[in-house]
View (cartoon, rainbow, N blue to C red):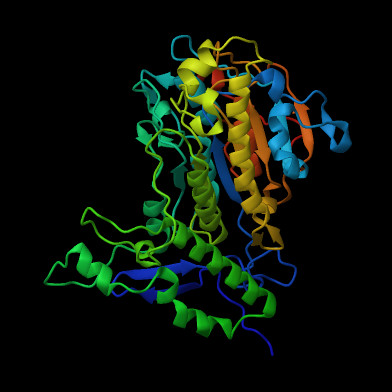
Length: 460
């Protein structure tokens, strides 16, 4: 039987008992591609590149972050703080030696964050330019339901009124894209609409709970059965895995509301399922990272967006990693980074926090690597730009800024490389990312952060 080619925008549709419309986007299937898996069958256009900014606050320990040797393959080895990423060495491009030329004394974290993501200095408290994710969105987001999506693991707040402390995604001056920290709200945003059937009565929460019996996936089951008849064996398996992943997230997010608020589809599943809510204790707990990593992966896999920012923690975040040990019950920024004794290679509690952040990054990369996309996986297609708001948090150094590129960017990055660029401008890393993602900008950044060339030897 000759299978009909599917349009990339094929979705499963259904309606909940409340009247809310449900849309489940599908992952990129073989039936949507040409015979060699490099372009969409319906249009002939190349499989879309995907981009992620993955940001962690408070910097690293440069002496433990930077690999000892440069080169490719066996010529270099992961540093101590990059060891959690060992399973992804072949996908990593480490960029060391870079200097953030825009760090300003007294506002090191705000100016450092702005420099690391926009290449431009602050104007008072305001960001002056679009961040790298939005520059990339200009190049690749056309046609996606969401131009970009911004999510966070912990809303632990830093001190200060600057735009660049509230988020690392900016459409331009005074135009912040704030992160969503509530997994349930994000799930609803991705997989349901706000349209409901008009009603003359307003049932209370108990009535809604009794009425709404379908989960998101239950609502689209008929559409899924129809689609299955049009799929080959491998695509059937891929769709089943995709829907199983969504079901698992539904179950993790299940809870019964007690405030009389409106029900979401996820809240209508099994009453015995575990719950995951927003981090309310500034702890960046593993469970929240897990569900946000899963939701982010699904958003990319089904092309709800091609550009995503995942803020593990904000710049200068006052986060408490209590779950990492009894000795970690202190403000990571104020106490652990700034007052613990030691140097750039020896602050044990800082090292614990950075290693935890990298383990959380590894969980996200695991999801990307295990999710088929086009002829490869999400990690083959994506570029994940990893950075922070300072180099060494104790004294706010601006040299040896932590920069890591993960993924193959659709073949633009080779991976398994460490490049050292002593004292070179950090903004060149942003320009390199822009070029890898197909942007045609000829310069990036402002003032001391302005550049018009990429880092040499990075792109294929």
